[in-house]
Image 1: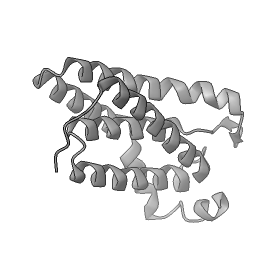
Image 2: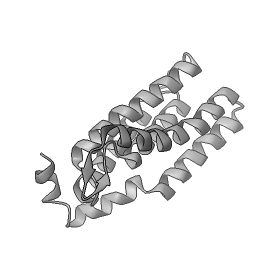
Image 3: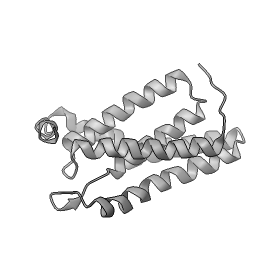
Image 4: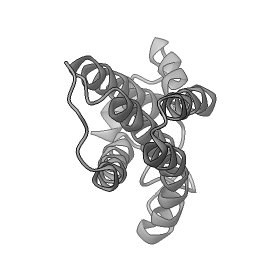
Length: 153
């Protein structure tokens, strides 16, 4: 499966790396934090600030545990995708789990996973699947800490 994805990574698909770029994610995370502060949702502000930091650190630890390498570099799970999933999860929580936010986050995550899995020189596509699961777990813990969120459509 990974070889099939890598066969398509040198064309226009390489532009998908923009989706999981650290600068783009930093802007999204900062925006989410500012929304939380503006609405005086202090507990959410803490979760929105800490969760991406956990998403950056935990994959580095897990890479050493799993030891999966691609061209000599530790690959599994992808830290870029883990962080992207967590940042987008915080955006969804900030939007009150509105349907539009969930759909946008799903599409964004799929594009980011394709970008990293197809074009990045140090990842297999399956590294992004593991990162999706890890990121979802981190967001879930954050949501449990926050408690019930009002649903908006």
